[in-house]
Image 1 (cartoon, rainbow, N blue to C red):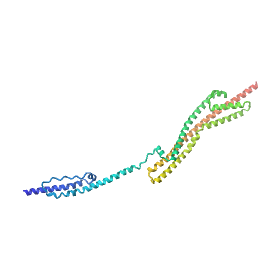
Image 2 (cartoon, rainbow, N blue to C red; image 1 turned 60 degrees about the vertical axis):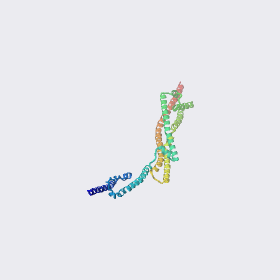
Image 3 (tube, one colour; image 1 turned 120 degrees about the vertical axis):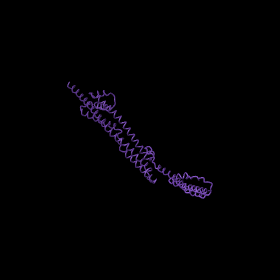
Image 4 (cartoon, helix red, strand yellow; image 1 turned 90 degrees about the vertical axis):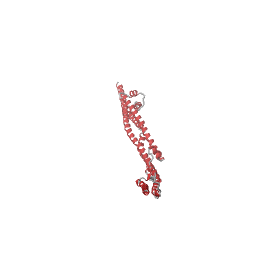
Length: 329
């Protein structure tokens, strides 16, 4: 009876030892795809079952380190791989962000440009400011002059003589009072002369001088617009060429064709051409506009000259008529 009991206990101990040896192997085979987890946490080892008070199956004990031995190198290898991969991943991410280009706003490009390009941009900006100043000043001047001249022509429309026209206008200054004053001066200086044709010719010559002087006065500022409109694109192109030359020199020094290195210099150079066009296009448009408005105003001046000439002719005819009537009496 005792032998049977001892045999049964030996068989049970052998089965427990086999199960204990098989448990680490099954743990390795179940988790082959997670080396990182095995590196972080070593493979769990099932606790050795408490065997009966029989010390015979102590032989399998050395197999525990041999079974767990493959796990430790795998864990250490995974740990080394993780430590070598993570530092490499950060520089790659940083390398992806490093080539990012700086902000290319107009102000930043102006501040980063060369001294010559900056001077060109400032000159073109000043030219553009002059263009808009001329636009405002000439618009006000032409509007006021045209309004005054039309009002003066309406006032003398019913006048019968130069003196009556001067009384209608009063002591105001303007182009029409200048015509009337020239006609009266010529009639006074030609008193006693019998040739009305000569008086009219001399008065017409005075009128022509007044018209030319008024045309020169009203065209002040037009030459500035013409100059800006014709030269600004070329000045901007000069700044662009200079900036691109400096950009190519910088590329040769840096020995790279990376877009982050090349683009800012070229953009700064092209900004000069853009400012040149911004200054030139409005100048050309405003010049053409004022050419039409000036032509319309000079037509009003010609009407005023004709009105003064007609009044002078009436006065001459009236004076000769009174002389003939006195002679007849």
